[in-house]
Length: 320
Image 1 (cartoon, rainbow, N blue to C red):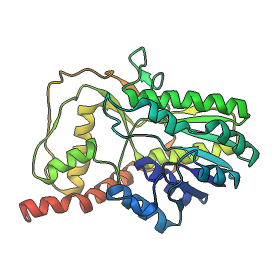
Image 2 (cartoon, rainbow, N blue to C red; image 1 turned 90 degrees about the horizontal axis):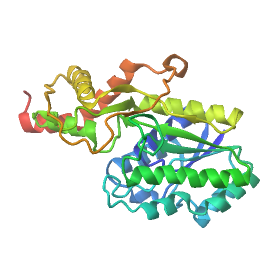
Image 3 (cartoon, rainbow, N blue to C red; image 1 turned 90 degrees about the vertical axis):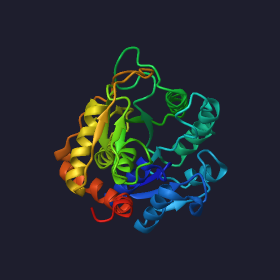
Image 4 (cartoon, rainbow, N blue to C red; image 1 turned 180 degrees about the horizontal axis):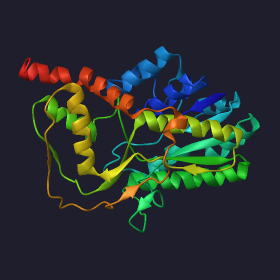
């Protein structure tokens, strides 16, 4: 099928585009900025997708005239994965700009998508939104960013209903793996590559960390099912449900034995409980049906960090 996918330069978007492409689908990926403007790990993702043969269209923001023209050309599914994320960790996150960017012209867009023959729309949500996942009640948004994601879906849901096009939701937890942004796992690897002990300040939080390769397979499977059965549905795949301390130790064990380096971890006494203690997804992926192998996934993570982080350790410590 033909899939119009926004947000393909992001960590999860890259994996979604690549997995859908490998499953034989035509993926057309409009990007917010010109393709040659992406740098760092985001630039690496864009370059890899280009080499794979994914159709990348730079400078086509969601809801723009160029985007609406692209919608008019038709496709089977619109996968809206892109989101405004600037300063997403801060309480100063621009909530109103995010909602505007995420839903721009969506009233017109849904009407034109329906006319162009789109069978369904799939929006990506976050377990950190209000009302998502499972954990401490009430299920409040973690941040203004999480709030923006939840409000975005409500707006899209409103216009989808009025246009008569089904809207489904795919909720992601904490993905990790190759081509990740410098977040928790990259922090751990950064410490170990310099021969340092990684400290975990919030080991008591119970979170849902999932291999991005498994998440991407679950996403592709969901997209394919929604083409054949486009009625609105929501799914939230779950991975390793455990404390962040336990996950850090799991990651240390799996990476340490693959890279043959020390991976010391210190779990600090947690004093900051400004976020909900527990927030997890609820749907367990059928890994046999999806054809996913846990060992292979860990091997891929190890190989990626061997290429990107291990040279730092060699430079600092020589051949020790």
